[in-house]
Every structure is written in C-alpha cells, then in structure tokens.
Image (spheres, rainbow, N blue to C red):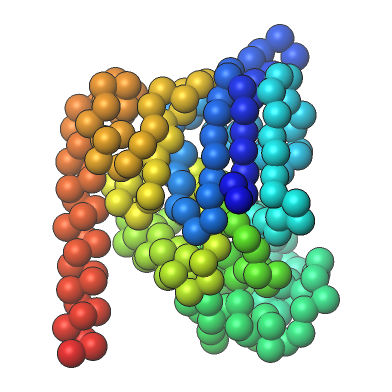
Length: 243
C-alpha cells in the first residue's frame, strides 16, 4: 500500500500560489528526495503532507494509522536552558531511557544521552533530532533540509546514516535537500520542484533532464558523479574493513 498519495495539489497563501498541480507518491521503504531552488514550494509541500497547511486544491491521502517521524530544518534552543539529550527526547514522548538509547544508536550517536543539548555540535544536534523522530518506529521519515548549516563532510555522513536507518528499519524517507552532490545517489527517486513538478525519476534520469539543468546549471550532472565516487569509496572502505 502507498504510504503517501498526493494528487493534483495546489497550495496558496492569500493570492500567492506556491504549488500547482503536484502529484507525488511514496511507497514503503523508498527514499524520495525533493530538490528545487529557494521559493520553489518544497517546505509548503511537506507542510501540506503533515496537515499544517491546507490545500487550495487537490488532496493528500495517507495510509491509515501512518506513523510519521519529522526532522525539521532547524530548531532553536535557548543557550541558557539546562536540558539533557534524554530530557529533550522525552519532552513529547513517554519513552523509556532504553528506548532513547536505542534511537540514538540508530542515529549513530549512542553516547550522547546525558550530554547537554547546548554542548552539541551542529552535526550531533541534527543526529539527536533524527533520533527523536525515530523513537516511535515511524513508517516514514520526513526531513526538511535537515543538514542546513553543516559542512559537506557532515552532510555526507548524515545522509549515509539515513541510508543505514532505512536498511535497518525499512522505513521510507521523504526528504528535502539543497545538497545535490550528496543526496542524488542516496535516493531511489528524485523530484525536481519549482512551483510544480518539473521532472522526476531515478537520480541519473533527473540529473540529465533539461528541466533540472535549467534550474541548477549544466555542471550539476557532475554532482552525481562526485557523490558516486564518494559513496563507492565509503562502501569499499567498509568492505575492506569487514574482510
């Protein structure tokens, strides 16, 4: 059964239509990435999917009892607020300490449970947000530019962890990203958005599509090759370590 089925969706804020006639589906276990320039409606699409923004037209159908984990673009915590990672993770969920530990382990940061949130690096902070989204074993993770502010190695490591989460839990991933060079090959499907769906398909198909190159430049085809090189090196390293 399809987890998310968006049909003919339009979203408007007053007289300003930011999305028009968008169709999108996400199936169990898929990694689907939405790319597009600033102002293309990417976040509005996610907000419509989670019910935070009402459609002006069309529909968003979710699988009954669909469990969604959400990783926001950013989250501000007062630097004077003393709050541990464990306490932060349990603010809205009555999760046990062991459940929090397991979620942090799945996010690749098993030793942060007793750390202060204000002492975390940017990468660690985003991993904690990921862990918090994993607490209730979601069917799908929604990520809204979750690596914004991280450097390229930090972004690449975060997306590799996303692939690991999918492999270990089987959950689907729907993510927005501006990191073209890191997400393309990590995705099963890529959707190029600019107020409407410009093109969609496999990473290789989208990277060669005229609509994609018109938005991001002809040189972006090399971004896919760059990620493949880094990605293959990562897997070769792991394979050699295992042998």
